[in-house]
Image 1 (cartoon, rainbow, N blue to C red):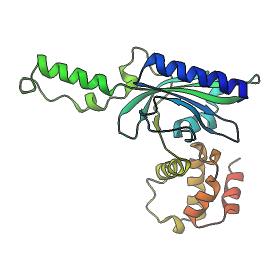
Image 2 (image 1 turned 45 degrees about the vertical axis):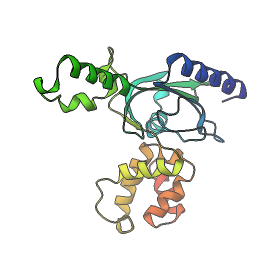
Image 3 (image 1 turned 90 degrees about the vertical axis):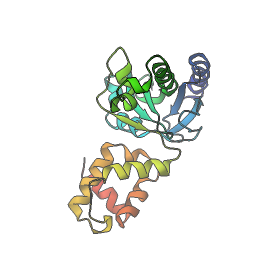
Length: 232
């Protein structure tokens, strides 16, 4: 992002944060190579992140899928805060004159206070002993399902990491959750399959990802580069 854009959108973040209130986290990501991180944030108590925190797994996937080429924004997908609260998340792509993404403006709505108020009110007008236990979905429903309009995206869950190391560990863990063989005992084809999964999740857009994955596989960085080159 240019300094002018950064200044303008930083003001927008502050404005939206104060206008929407404490249940809305507003985040600005700068996608410039020297940043690729949060550069402005309002109401950060919702996710616990700060300026300098990395992109989310969902944001990385949107970028690797080039979602911005056919959409200006993605609305109402599910986010999970460090507290475990479910969030209704939306992202707008900030593009340059050529249509390339240079930033992301994100809003994460935490409706946990309202769900608590709803449950408290229900317990007053309809005491618990006189009503059946609420279905499990009521306590864990995705926020997008509570909106009047359908989500613009398919199923997607966003996790908020405090730093790049935590984000890389999360993405790698998700990609290898079904792998039972120790990482250093995987054969070449198995490693390639994991590399492809990591690539589709945007792992290799993160600084230091090559070294991180090489360490997990107990191989050289050159080997990871070779696997990646074979994907294209």
